Every structure is written in structure tokens, then in C-alpha cells.
View (cartoon, rainbow, N blue to C red):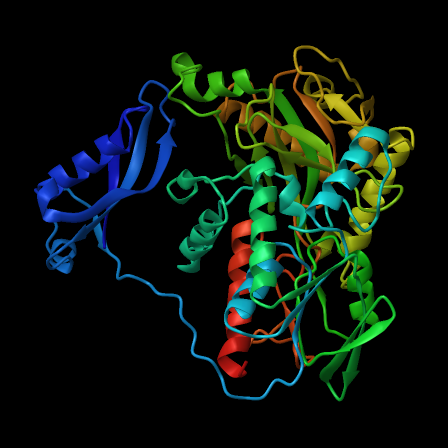
Length: 527
């Protein structure tokens, strides 16, 4: 197909206007085209008086498509993309035991799904509950402060992304991204998920998508064991022989380790088992909340409130003195949510539903940290996270309330929580706190720099009545489990995978990594 990019149309003009404009640029009539549709579309609001949609249109012709890419009309940007079919040649080495997948987040779901569709025996181990049980457990924590350490925002069917925004944006440019989006669409994601430059499913719709993918794995012969935690490995002469789960041993020579970034007890077990690990940089910070209408006004200017414009979203970053501060996991029209997975520690996250129609917008404002800050030990980053979370728990009264401050007080270097037009959305309540006592000075210094810089980029970002809630510590995994080009650890048969192993950052990249790891197993071993 041909991809015609940089097609600009007014907001609300519809896909048809973009397709018509693309065909006009090619000098084609609709009758000479087999298929034409909007492949990707994004909103360009960099100049508030000139807001428009920028689309890439896919066109399939009956004749020679490549000639357009080789000799495009003047001023037209065209890319020829051959049709891609995700096929894997199966290997012929014997694999007498099932492939075990530890973790049922995006990496585990897509790895298990591909293996099961190809006819391989798959056993999935998930420490948390199935979606129905998980929703009850999360609601119990958010309403009554009753934490289940094994079934919460971090653990359970669908992984941590299930209780976020269902964002499908990614910085990787892997051709499998399209395959992942198509699979989500087959299981109930909205049709526009394939077309948006920054697609999202929403927490509410993502739950049904995940359940549908689970049922497909089971129909294809896969076995999924919920409330089943990986507790040990049997390694002999550098080769995996079995896994231990809840005191039971399962013969296993191939384990896909997709446990997510918060499986701290699993990381400790891997260390005891002698699996090589290393510390990985990540980020820590706070959540910031504004009124969504203020964000829209800062982005869209006089066009704010137009029914043709989506809730405004932003992505801001700044680097200074070798350290980065940036916004992360921005949730338009969403909530700041309790996301703890351990007793005695406060963790914040953000989520939005599909409609993104809540009053507040929120995002993490995070500062990069590395082993230079917390030490060279492979688990030092994990200990650093835990210490910050426990400080936050104590500072806010040890009752699951979260520490908070208004931006005006924070920028002045003093504790303060003046609630004005922005009402904190954190379900278990907030308590005035001094972030200078909770976070290292290099973090709070960069947060203040970031707030002021971002306010120049997005007017109103550092408004005095915006609310900061903390702490945000689970931005990514604090460890990396090294693997070779064959995706295996130094322990043969162990395949570190996804975000927890340090090879992804979000739903899309984790899903792609799951596919890559499963593909490596399929290409080497017979069913």
C-alpha cells in the first residue's frame, strides 16, 4: 500500500475529507482505487490559532503502487509499504514440557496468545486474580483501604496497564505495533484505535478486551492459573528444569518471565536462584492535577470547548545538568488512583476511562534517577522506591491517605495544601505534606525547574492551585535481567520479557516484546 502523509484538514471534517485530499494530490479518481482510508491521524495544536488534523492516508491501487513512491507528484510525501504478514517458521527441536509464562500483563498475554494459536502447550501463571476478582479487590482498596498484596492495581489479569488509561502510544517503531493494534481491535477495542496517532482504549473498555483475549487462549488449549505465584526455579548446570509455584513443582525447560515492574519478591527470588540482574535507571516524582478545561484552554486557546476537539493532552520534557524531568502517563479527564502493592507504602498512578470525561487532567511529573543515585546493587533501585513509598505512608498518617501540596506552596519551598478549583481525586484522600522531606533534593529541585519550564510551554501548568499528589515511583522497572540475541538469560530456558525485565515501557512495547520472545521459541522448537 501507499502511505500519503502530512494531509491537513480542519478538526471535525471527518476521514472522508482527508482521503479525498490525498487522492487529489495523487491525481487519482476514486474509481481507480481499490481501497483508501485514514491510517493515522493526530491533532496539531502547536499554534493555537491554526489547529488542524494531520493524517496519513493509506491507498491501495490495482496497478503498480511503487511507481508513485519512486516518482511522487511534486510536494507529496509518499511511502510504499509492502503488505506484512506476521508468520514464523516453526523449529524442529523437541520441547517435551509446556512453555510456562509467568505474568499475564501485555507481554504475557501476547506471548501466550501467539504460542497457543500456533499449537504449543502453554501454562500461564498469574499471582493475581482474574478480572472480575481483581476489580472487586481494587474497589475494596480504593473505598475501604483493604489492600490485597497479590491482587491490586499492579498484579492481576491484564497487568498494571489495566488500571491506567489503556494508552497504546509507544516510541518504538516496530512493524509488530500494527499487529498488536489489530489484535486489540479483534477483541473489542474501538475502531479508531488503529487510526489515532495516540490511541487509547480506556480502563473501562480495556478490561473487556483483556477478558476476550484470555478466552481465546483457553479455546486454543492454553491453561491459565490465577492466584498462582512463581516462587522458585530449579536450575541444573545452568539449564532451567522446573518452576516452583505455591509449593508445587512444574517440569519446565522454557519459562517466559513477564512478571511486571512491581514483582519485588520475584526479583529477590531470582537473585537467590543466581539469575544475573543489574540495576536500571527509572524515574520518580509526583502526580499533578489541573482542571481539564484549563488544560484545554492552554492548548487550544479560543478554540477550547469545540465539540470537534478531543480533551487536551500534553507531553513535556526538559533536561538540565545531566538529569531529565518530564511528564509521563498523562490522563485527560481522569483520576489519580491509589496503586500500592505492599503494606505500608503509598504509590500513585493515573487512569482515564474511554470517554475521558472527568473534571481533572493528571500526569506524572517525574525525574530520572540511576544507580549513581541509589547504588550499584541490582536491587538497590527497588529498595530506593520502597523507602520513598514508606516515607509517604508515614507522612500522610499511616492510613492510606496520600501526601499532597498545591503547586504555589511547593514552588515557594514550603508545605501547603490550599484546595481551590482543583479538587484532589485520589480516592482515599490526601494530607498536607512537605515533599522536600519525602523526596531527595535532586528530585524536588528538578521538579521545580520542570514546573516553571513547562508553564512557559503550556500556560497554566504551574498554576498555584494545581495539586501535587505523591509519590509516583513505579514509572518502570528498577532492574534489568540481561538476555542474549536469542532472548535467553544466562540461565538457559529462561526468557526475560516485557517491562519487568527491563525491555519495555508501556502496553505496546511490552506486547511487542512478548511476541518477539514467543516467536523466538516457536522458531526453535516444534509444537
